Image 1 (cartoon, rainbow, N blue to C red):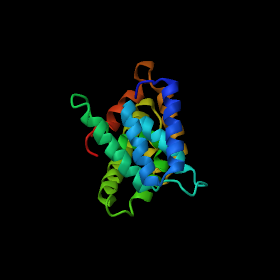
Image 2: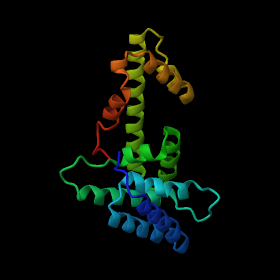
Image 3: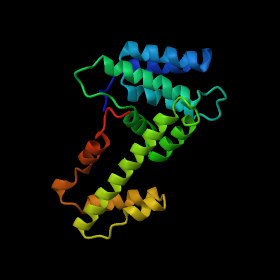
Length: 199
């Protein structure tokens, strides 16, 4: 997770995001926003979280198209990683996953990007990695379900796209684990970062 930043600085960055975007065409605006973020060395996840509200505001006829957001964020992450050659690289897919908050919203965003032939191959790879991650997650919790003595149901929830029931299932398992094993989030983090430079 990125470090906490000065609230005044974040307020300034948000002002830049909205002010610049209203004043320019979308591609120019996002380029200027990214330039300002780079000047402040803002973490890519914070950048994405500032852009998403504009992208998701469907009432705004001038909202940026998904492929432009995708391209600008990708370039920003490359620059951010280049400044830190001795640190593990920030991954595009993990940034999007954390930024959109849940799998359904991320899949919706990627489906908006996919029609652009410049990104179709990348998006296909991201979708493949997401499917692999989701399957590993289900397998892990089904194995844990057997440990705590309840019937494994992750595969069924996944097949039915019933994410609400799947999350209830996860919390039930976590609550039944011994206290020393309840730090399941550390395992999830390791799984999600298994291929940090893949995308």
